[in-house]
Length: 233
Image (cartoon, rainbow, N blue to C red; front, top):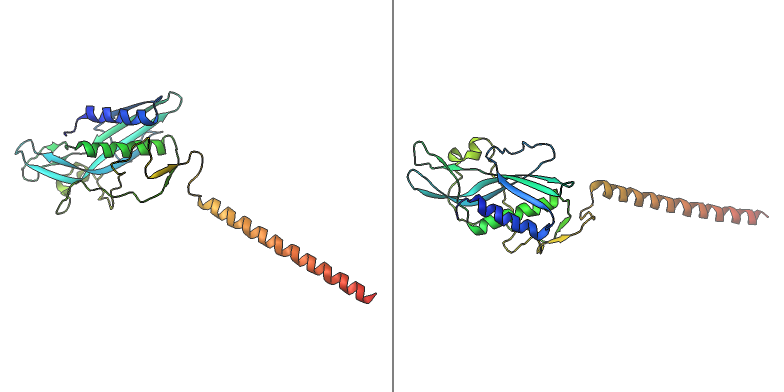
C-alpha cells in the first residue's frame, strides 16, 4: 500500500470519530515540518515504523524498520477543532550514484498502527485524558532485517533528525480508540501520584506520628505528677 495521503486522512477521520464524534480534526501533509520546532500551542509526536521503498531509477526494492513519521498537533477548545500536520521522511537507493529520495510504501496494517498511536497521543496530550498502563506495550517489528540502518541515504539522518530508537513502542493491532484493551481511563484522576504528593504524604504521616508521641509523653508525665503528689500528702 503506497504512501497515499487520502488513505491516511480517511483512516484518521474514522478513528477520531470513534472517540470525539462532535469535534473536527484535519490531517494534512507538511514537507516543511521539523522535529522539536513547534509553533506556540502545538505538540509533537513522532513514530519510527517499518516500510518498503522502491527506487524510481533502477527499480530496486528495500525494506527499512526505521522510517520516521512526524506529527505536530494543535487543539482549539473554543472552536472544537483540531489540526495535525504530518511528515514522512524519505530514503534513497544506495546502489544508484545520484539517487532520488523515495517515499515509503506502508502496509494497511502498519498505517493503522501508526494512526492508532497518534489518536492515543491526541487523547493524552490534547484532551489530557488519563491512562493507566495495565500491562507492558509490546514492541512490534513488521519486517525482519539484517544489517545496520543506512544512515547515508536516510533523509532524517542527513538532516540530523533520525536518532536510532532503542525501542519502538506501538499499540497492539487489536487496540481501538473506543475499546482500551490495555489501558484504564481515569478522567480527572491522576493514575500515578507525583513526587510532591508522595513527599507531602510522608511529611503528614511523620508529623502525625510526632504529635502522637508528644501526647503520650504528656499523659505519662501528668500521671507521674499525680502519683508524686498523692504520696507526699
